[in-house]
Amino acid sequence: MVKASKQKDLVFFGELHNNPICHWLQMEFSKSIMAERNLQIGVEMFERDNESDLQKYLNGSLSKSDADTLIRFWNNYETDYQPLLEFAKTNGIAYFGTNIPRKFARIVYKEDFEGLNTLTEEELTYIAPLPILYDAELKPYKDMLSMMGGHGGATLPKAQAIKDATMAHFILKSWDKKALFLHINGAYHSDYFSSILWYIEQSQADLDMMTITTLIQDDIHSFDAEELGKADFYLVIDSDVTTSY
Image: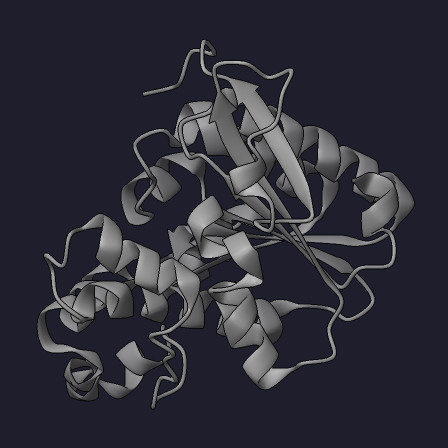
């Protein structure tokens, strides 16, 4: 994976949020990349309205206790995400939150994309520029509707798409073209070279991107052929591995 990523612009690590093997390998991968070239890290786990305080914490102008008060951390932050953030802070690696504030994704679920027109000028800086492109035929969005049995309606995958569009926007906005940008996200945001990658391609189609996905199997000595086509690299984890929640 490290060898293949040496000439890439963007690498997407599709994780299972509660799996410690994913988080361990993200750290090892980051260490290896840092030894080879400039590295930047972006993550789904921080929302853009917290970005200013996140950067203050990273540059040392905000204490950990204040960060704990001001920043919305995921419940498994301390066990699963804090180590990589602290690694980036210690080593001066640029680290960005890329996700839309969850409350705005809920607006799309309830009111479709048109609901975003009610956002203030400041709130609009936390999301991808309007209007939002959308392709209902993308496999992840079709699969989401199928998996839900039609419940949630057409706005359910759109709420997912606004996350993908926003992450794509802030990846491109943050990326230093001399560096490898490693983005950490749930696998469903980058599987099938779609979702975030589709939005990136709408803005900049010439980028060289690589994806990693994560699978859970009872038997790790064989590979489920139905999973082919999801990613460039597969992290196959034994189902007996203890999860963080």
